[in-house]
Length: 201
Image (cartoon, rainbow, N blue to C red; front, side):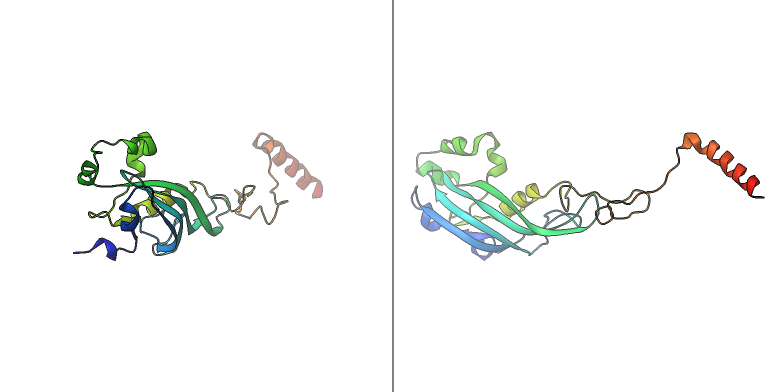
């Protein structure tokens, strides 16, 4: 049976969990969990994810406030060029103590949790190990990075994309264009071509 401390995403918090008001800074690298994006835009499983910030203990649990950074891969939705640069996101998450511990502290209700986590508490709440000694940040990393990934990544804000007719990169050939004939004048163009052919005979 696996132990919480064996997880690569387990952060020891027993020292600060013993008393409210304690703080534990963190500046560490963790492997990216699976399931962050896809082949078009995402973070490769096992990639280095940098986590900086602090864990702070309160009566009902532990609050993490910090920043998550990971090397994401993406493809520009306009010109299809690969994009590789760090994606970063600020995060605040709550790790509640189990009900039995809250009861011993006289806090069987949600109390302070509601004040901090608000109405979206369930979306930003993550588990501590059963003994409260470790914070598991696997789901936190996955959720944070998935939300940070752009829906329509661009290599640059003013990317011109590709020519719809031949696929030329309009960023590299800004003057690229094709001569087009308005379909309404197609008959006249044919008539002109016939006249020119007759005059050439």
